[in-house]
Image 1 (cartoon, rainbow, N blue to C red):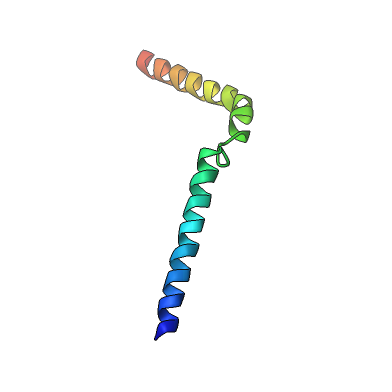
Image 2 (cartoon, one colour):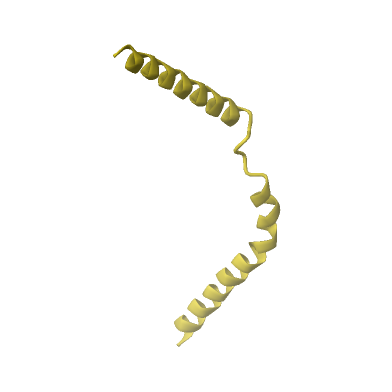
Length: 64
């Protein structure tokens, strides 16, 4: 029976260690996204084209 108590204590300690490591990684910027902002500018033109196409289509529909 004492083995169960030891295993429970060890598992709680391991869980706390992982929680502290996760919080430290988040505060340290480990999960910050550095890739997406640098690539976003490559796809901005497509978004502008799609928006302008929608505007042109709505203006054509209004004139009809």
